[in-house]
Amino acid sequence: MVVAEHKYPVGSPSFNSMASYDLFQLRDITRYFQIYGDLQHVEPCKIGHINETYIATYHQGGSRVRYIHQKLNTEVFKDPDAVMNNIQRVTRHQRQKLEQAGQSDVSRRVLTVVPSIAGAPHHKTGAGQYWRTFVFVEGVRSFESVTLPPQAYEAGRAFGEFQTQLSDLPGERLAETIPYFHHSRRRFDAMTAAANADVCQRTGESAAEIEFAQDREKMVDVILKAMAKRQIPERVTHNDTKFNNVMLDAVTEQAKCVVDLDTVMPGCALYDFGDMVRTTTSPTLEDELDLSKVQMRMPLFRQLCRGYLEATGPMLNKHERALIAFSGKLMTFTIGLRFLTDYLNGDRYFRVHRPNHNLDRARTQFKLVESIEKQEEAMQKFADSV
Ligand code: GN1
Ligand code: MG
Image (cartoon, rainbow, N blue to C red):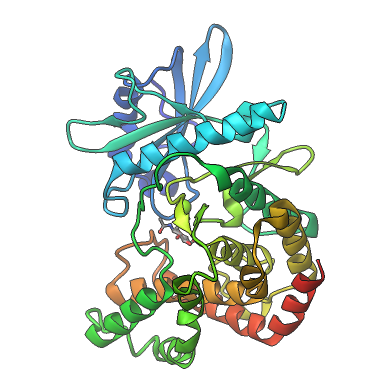
């Protein structure tokens, strides 16, 4: 097997920053999946902070076909069987809905899990690693940030449709693959505990961010209280609605499918919307260093909001609709808290690529929170008008 030698020669920074052990092990891994073809090469995909992802090219009866092989991070996803069971139920339901609606191109609109030779949705290695394989969706692209308003519309529409498709998922409640994942109160308390413990002596460098967070403690209970009162219902949600998890058709730039389904579980529709506000309304990267560029842009928000509200139609209730703008602020704040916590704890959760990376990410989120605060009223007014 040629392991993408032309792309990542040994010794190049890209090669060294990958888990090379796994790269060589990949050939063995691929034998455990129901793939009919000859492996040509593998390249790492650097998107995502948690799992390890590879794109593999095979020759199958003379055609070139590609698959995604992914090693699940079991520190983060402690119950891989539950993750894969959720994903199978969700993708089967999506597929059924698309077929019933007479959609063409179904295998580009929903992820396809490739079973292992044992018929399981993943393969567990002797060393206890969990690998899974998906059909690679061709002719699509994802972006780390939005450059044009129609892209924000497409993101809103794609995740809105996703929630709508799953609103009648049959069977028992999905497993919580990461309990309390978006529990903003717990995220806030974890940040406070990390600052108090200060195991890496990083509170000096991040004093301004800790204070920024403390000043905003009140917001963390708002949605939790509304859920406790049952004003806001639990729904099946994606829970990682970053813009780079929407695949856009490479030609038309219309959303084709959403990916990264590990955190699909019971949640709150607003958390999905809020994370889209975080990742689509500022035309900057999540770790932008020039904070003057980090701003919630109303034209992008309008498109995002329209796309999402059109796709969810009558599904959302009045309590959810009333917190549309707020949810953007809350999710940006909560993910900022998580980056800050990880910085304080010594970068143990999110993959980092430079010193202070998590602190930079927290700063970017908090700058966006400030920008949303200034425009929250106008944002909600727009949402009310859709
Ligand atoms: C992680 O790995 P990735 O980029 O899909 C994280 C999300 C964060 C995101 C921030 C399981 O997602 O919750 O919002 O980083 N996923 C998990 O970029 O923690
Ligand atoms: Mg993810």
